[in-house]
Image 1 (cartoon, rainbow, N blue to C red):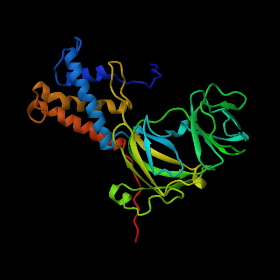
Image 2: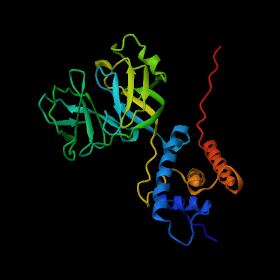
Image 3: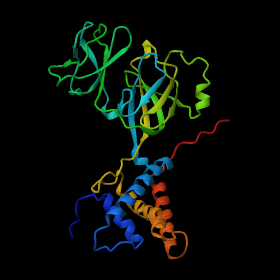
Image 4: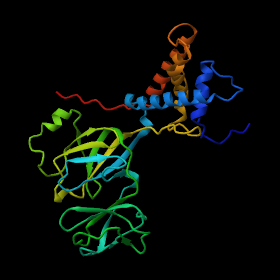
Length: 315
C-alpha cells in the first residue's frame, strides 16, 4: 500500500474546538458546533495558548532577530511599531560603492540583491551615525532610491543595512550576542533583574554593548543596553534568540501556529479549560479523565520541546 507522501496534517480553530467538545461529550459529531460554543471556546483557546508561552512550552516559537543600534541610545522599543529590529533571515548588509553627498536621495551600493521596494534601510553617515529611511521603488543596477534625502555625506565602503518587516513583540529574550561587520559574534549578558541593571552608575558611558535587560511590556517590548553605542560601534548589531508571541486564532479557518505534535495536548487542555463552563467536574468522577489526559499530553509536549541549557560549575 502506498503512503500519502504528505506531512502537513494540522487542524484549524473550529476543528480543535469541536474535538475538545467531543471529549466532553457536549456536541453531536454529526452536527455543526453551535455558534455560541465556538465563540466561547475560541476565547478560551486564545487565552490558553498565550499562557503556554509564559510556561516556555512554545520552543517552536523561538526565532533569531537582529537589532540595529543607534548612536547614544540606551533604550530600544522592540515590536511592530518600535525601532529597527527584524528577523535575522530578513536582515542584510552591503556597502557604499560610490560616495554620496548630503541632500542626495539615491545611493550606489555594492549589491542591491537583498534590497526591495519599501524595505527599511539604514545608511552609515560620515558623522558616525546611521540614518534610517525606506526604499523608494525597486533598486536597479545597484542604485537605490530613498524616501528621504541624506542628512550628511556618505563615503565609499560605509555600511548599508536593510530589512523588510519589524518583528512582533517578543515575550522573552533567551540568548544574545553582539555581531560586528565581519559577522563575528561576542556573547552578551542578559540581566534579568531590573533593579540590578538600573543600578548602573554611568548609564551614558559609550562603547561596545556588554549587557542588556528586557521588559516584554505590551505592544512593544523595552530593551535596555549598556554601554550605549558610540560612533565607533555603530555598525555592530545585536543578535538575539527570542520567543515570539503565538499567533491568534482569529477566524474559523486559522490553523494552529505550531507543530502537529502539539495538537493532542491542545485539544485535551482546551477540554479541561472549558469543562466547568458546561457543568463538568474535570477533577472528580467520570470527568477526571479530562484532567488526567490534559496533564499527560501537556507534560509529554513539554518534554519533547524542552530546551536543554548547559550547566556551568565554577570552583
